[in-house]
Image 1 (cartoon, rainbow, N blue to C red):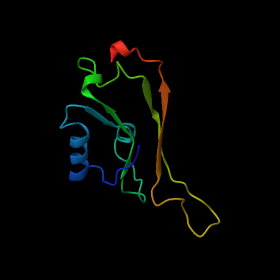
Image 2 (cartoon, rainbow, N blue to C red):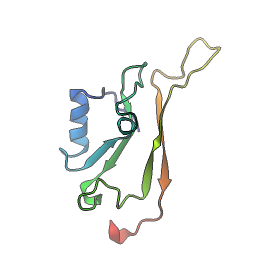
Image 3 (tube, rainbow, N blue to C red):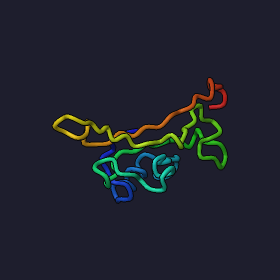
Image 4 (cartoon, helix red, strand yellow):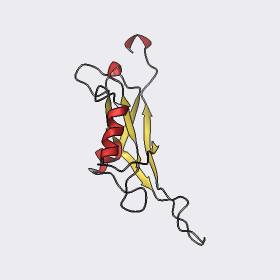
Length: 116
């Protein structure tokens, strides 16, 4: 999660995804885009530069899978939010120039090292 300082749907974003996935060999899922169908603004109201990324290396994926069979943490996509950190009564309106991004994870149990 966090500030990757690249705008969604840009050449930089596509390059970032290629690097993080070893040119598409691994699986990367943008959780905010999955929930909202777009990347919501996190720097001002319209610029998206903060993300929640679910990364699954190829060796951890089941056959034809996007990582769900061997995961030990479940990403609860419906809980993904953008936190604006607005404040009142101060000489500034927000605690940060970026909005925060959050998501809840569910622990599914201890892994069996033989299955990894």
